[in-house]
Image (cartoon, rainbow, N blue to C red; front, side, top):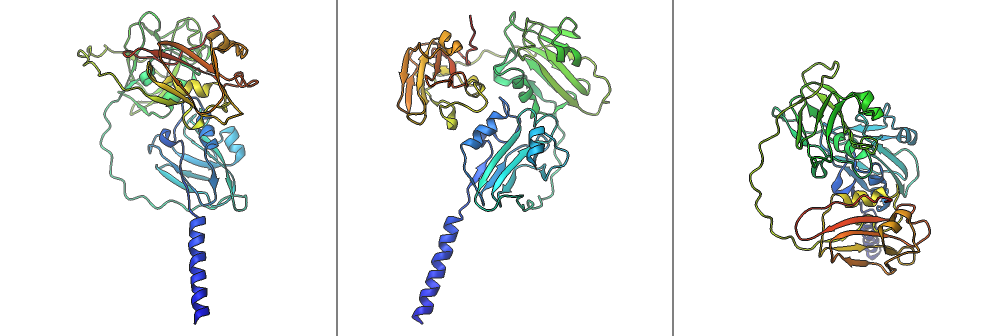
Length: 404
């Protein structure tokens, strides 16, 4: 009897140990970004994957809006070429859970339009178990869908808070902005810019591709420039200012609706909305501590300098804020440099160098600040950050370094 009791206890302990060792991790792909066409291109998801450890039994969660995104598992060849013709697995209703049932490499893409080529793709390596195609369990059948109410026209602000100008990172920014949106006849686009420094032109695809802005369909020079989407098809916008188109100030959208899909007529400008009422003064905000690169930390980023410029562009840095640079001691450092040294990656000329992580730098005065690393080739490979700091009121974005 004692032997049987001991054996039962051992079996119970082994079962408990197995449950403990087999604990799963749920990985939300992209964290708060979700699953969409990311600003900055594929670096967003490759950077996210670099910070995760994937083990057999873990689960990937792809969060996206049904009808605007999908997710497909594909072969490496299809991943590299963005070929969505014959996926291994495809789901169109978000969110999607995918269980990693075997070790090896897994590849996922978005199959809608140009989403994959614009960076909606994820490659991961799973440890544990035998490599090879992973069996999967299809998701449970969703409950009957409730018919959606009739959609009302949407007013889009092009670029959201960034507005309409030459974007950091080139034309990928506006392509990424548009890629997760569905444009219908009746929607409107608002182009917000500083008068006298930008404009908006409606152009053909040929002009859009070549950036030959001598031939345009319509020109709008006063902000906000509001354009109603009155016909289905492809619509193209850029700027006539010197080199703005070549540097990425260009937007292409596809419009759907009840109209025919024939040749695209020129969008019709409509009067701008009435001026807003006087804004209510905003109370001063408390100082913010920014972790540079968030979970990526401070290192040579995959994909080059666009990683840190993308991280900085949607943030407002105010006197009193703090930057925290997290890195592995002995492999990185933080150098405060001039704009000239930043542009040329001259690491022999520095204002200050910090070698022990975490480095905390409080922004005490307004102006432009530049950071890099003195380790060989780290700056040239993209480990550099430029920001603008403002006083307690106003707005700012990351500066665009120039060689001037």
